[in-house]
Length: 453
Image: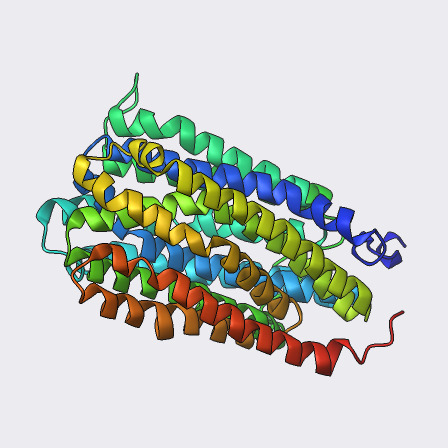
């Protein structure tokens, strides 16, 4: 049977395999980051308050992505490991139980969107314009979040079996649809209604639904290594536990980012709402640099998980080595761009004089941590792939909550907002140090003792 053949993740040269699997994801995630940036560029044309409101929505959007991506990481790791062990029944259970879990997540966020968005904004600001814009935007993206969750899950299923070129198509479609519809719904182009900030959210969810539908079709038609059938593979507590053994730490890790962002906004709002807008713009811009690294991770995790299941230690370590080199190069280029062109980057968001005054030094200071961050991201993803998601979670917790927020708060007491941005560099150094200790321990106990086959 075709299923019994060795998957390419256990045989193809590691360098070309990692690039081959990761590159389509990296390209699609770049497009994804581009439409996030375009979204904010159009919103900024409404007003700085509108831009600030969308920036403040980031913790909720990130939490949705955290649950979708984290569950996907768990599905990905279990599915790939099961294929490496030739356990095809468990691979199918991983895929179908993952889809069930994502639908549960959607219902939870729909309830939040219907009843709690205004409360969320009032916890951050008393500005009525920002609250109004934020309530409109966040309600739409949460109530109609099933598109986002479905898109992410179907993409992870394609990535887990090495069919990343198809996930590039789904993300590309979603991004293109959103970019085209953004100005139409925001400003009322042609026969489209003028909806302002709400229009930005509508364009986003339509793009997500488009990508989700294509993802489902591609999985059914081309992903022959798994079978999507929720009746045949009903919820299985044992499989769900295995998914969340890896996925839950990943969810918590990314959720921590939401807490960090919420806390950082609270610190910055004491300086000005413009400072919050700058932080929001930074996150949009840095996503264009970080997204390719996350795309690289989506190639790294199934390769490492597969070869961990197949007990091929040389391929495990070679995958990490190539990932470190590629990630560092991407981050170095990103650092140069932010150092040389901060004014031009901020200018895309209708930056006022005050926004440039705060934003130019912010981009230059924060970007100094990019190369260090690349090492932390690869270490964290490697630990997840090897079944040690808890270590990765501890790294994230230490970086963002134990170090970053407290240091940022203390530096804010100097009254100099430029000092606050240095907390990113300090936190990243601590995180990489901790991750290195964790990985060396795992390598000694689990990888070095393997007899390579």
